[in-house]
Image (cartoon, rainbow, N blue to C red; front, side, top):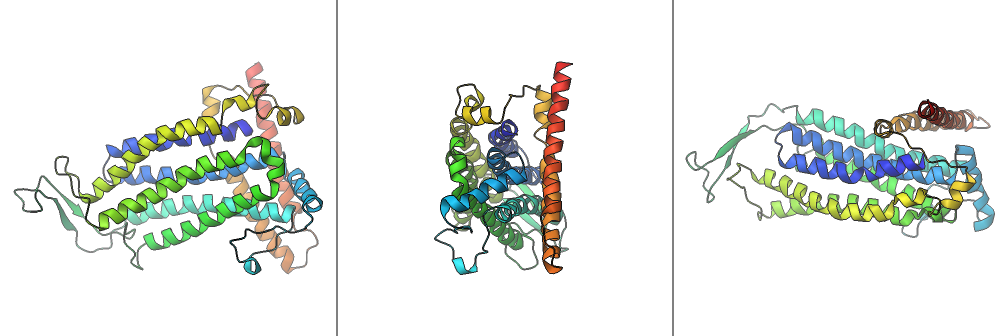
Length: 365
């Protein structure tokens, strides 16, 4: 599981770079699909990083919860200590142990689910016209938009997505609001999890890994915002040699910068997620010896299969079901609201063990 999450996170750089490079030569709907793929993989990487921390803390839910409960004596408190910048009276009082672990699980998974859900909603909205007449968008020369001087003209048809607009009837303002709140909560849960369990996670160097991942997410998001502001100021103009409108130029500029930044990110990721961690004299040697770790050397095909988010689907079902069960249990006075949830976690662990046995059997055959 540690190796798998390392590889999933490392794939972030080539996927971002390839998507941005392809978008430079794409137009229309293909750009929209590529952009949504990048955004979904960004949320997927956040989930994989949290999964990496969990796997390092313990192999299953009960062992992780037990370790977190052990912090009560070490830290001298039963409940989580929220960050100083939060208004503590309004924050939930999570008890160190199963309750805190469940809250962090749900906080990270909801971001991955909402990100993927809004990607689908936005694609549908982008292809749903409002019925208003399409406007002709001319690529002009010397600020003159006559037919003779226009090298290309496109029909711009209003749709219900409303990119760059904040009308109440478009999807974009609600997407921006929900995704930003969801991402903020996920990142807070992630930071809080590290803050409380950092004594167990130190050999993994989680802070270096978090900064490298969040650096890319933060940079690409604010870079897009800055280019949008520059566009609103009228500084960016159309590029008629290629028939690009102002919107095309903004998108191309953002994609070009991402291509350049990914070369820097590749160097940073090679330091934050080195393969040497899994060698006999690597950074994780003591932890790997304790859990009886054996490196998995599968082929390229199995490596690509491991990239599929099957565990995200499983954990979403388990955690969402667990959250509903706990609410119902609290309403009806159930004594233990975690039993079925723990079984779901344990079934996920059993699935993982069975998968590793099958891989070992196929390799020996």
